Length: 615
Image 1 (tube, rainbow, N blue to C red):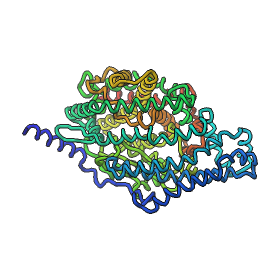
Image 2: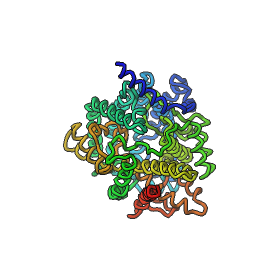
Image 3: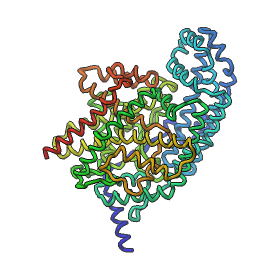
Image 4: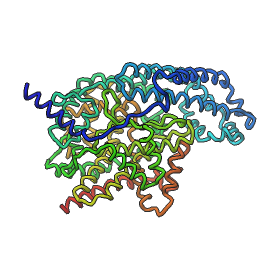
């Protein structure tokens, strides 16, 4: 018993030491949306959203074709403007509900608010559903003439043209309404079950019960035994809950198959490609280029790292272990803030000024709390408000990069907000551009300040690992999802099958320098993107490779890059990736585009090898 208590005390002390010195961490102030869960303004807006949605349907249903045919005399532009206003109101309500819920998914009051508002807003938006469907029934030539004749309607041209891309996959109106209304009890309910289950899990390491985020953080500990125990705790709890996670995965994969089949999508990822406004062949070229590069990137790097750690082969729990050269001091919040802001300032004062608003306005929620959603995100909310950032800040170097990443999203969302609610949203592939660019700016700023060879090696290694996690690991995730959704069409998958698929794609991507020990076959279970956004993951690799190429243009540009960059961010969802990249001389559809981005990672590994030879 004394030994067990001693272990618990030692583990608790290590965890305490690794999170001490963070300083005062900010918690977000959601009052810019609503003053509280019981705020009269929230109740007023809920009723208003319902009433205005019903009134809009009565005013405009079955009239859009006639209004379009009237050209300049028609009121289609006016209808679209009212539609946008109601859409933003619903967006504000659901943004607030989602952020309150993310702050503590274990709180029954918050969960009820989220569930109730989700149901009410689904009911309200059901009355708006006809608008996009009916607009897509209008003849192409008639709608084109109307957009040219009516400046108000013409303003929304990018949104209308995007909408037309969905036309071949659009179903009969009442089926669309059924899909929409049943989403609350279908996909939405399974997503919520996953979230609430995951945040409630506790992982015991030497008697200390930890939530998911702190346990994953232990995999970055300098203590190898602590990493092993954390990996074991993760595997044990995932295994205990594997039946549930397998059921959720099977159900959602089948749900997607049904939707894809009804809509006429051929490939399992086609709906995601359409949503991202990216051609399937571009994604195929990205995935093929990354897989071909596995030996030159991850296999090569992890072999070097194993040698640095004095191992013939690393265990899977050693993959993100710090190098002996890595400083172990916790990075306080103020230091993290100043590091990111100074990097942004050096690139463009406007970028730092926008990012500073997140700190001054309390738009960031940083502490780790029981029940809080794990991971990190930047939520755009609605243009009439501002974005919010959620972090689980623990003072690791990667946490500083996560701050830079999410603030990049935030800056992008602020700038794109000028496009309005319907056209500010950016496809996932381009949404990751500003975030990864923010990370790169921060990394390069820190690297340029570093003169010590050992410290430079540690920084380069950390960046290479982050890039491998963003590019190699996410494409491996994409391949895993392709296996899962492809095989699900033949029937339900067992936990063993899912574990086997996971181990196969991980072994291929990580290479022979990493041993996938017992228990790792369960680690697919905690990845939220598989649940919330199937095939989202390739967007990270897309963004990272794109930014590598973009950053090379920036480094070689004499002037004017910042203006072009901000124009790209301000465009929001109004332009295709080809239009946005053209001013920089880049084209993601060209065969050699992805090699340019991957060669940047390869160059960093070359630099690490050179430093190693000098030692």
